Image (cartoon, rainbow, N blue to C red; front, side):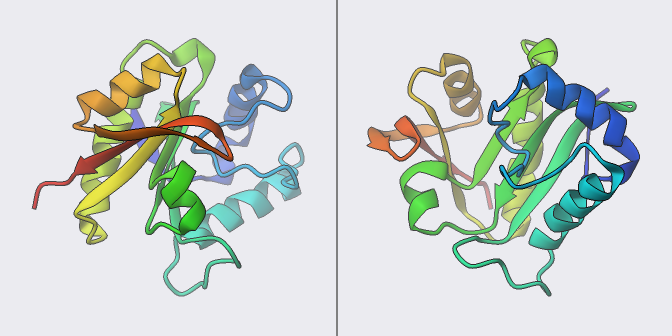
Length: 176
């Protein structure tokens, strides 16, 4: 049975196994991993986990150009299967290209409904933040992600060229 957990240093080895499966230099949607993050060592991983947790803390101002964001890992037992992020608001870049929610499932865990399950769980959490609708985007060629978003109630607003490439932009209304 999958669960969403906040990032934790306890899952360092499991997270690294998932990370390596993605492949060198591949962007892991929803993970919050930046090129400057060093995650191989215990100290580097702990610093990254601390940053992820701080980004959701209302007492910690977001870094310049960033917005408050909550992160969860999709896990089964001690296996890390993916990640999902909920941005609490949109800045100009997120409105154009990134959206409120980003998610990714490691290659060996795909086609099990985990992305749909995680998205549904996070949509209910978005409502608790006071959001009445959220923007979710995906690459125009990512048919699997488009299906996940559409099954969650996503209504396609447009397909446009963005900094991330050709991007499908969906809005999901959240029930009150």
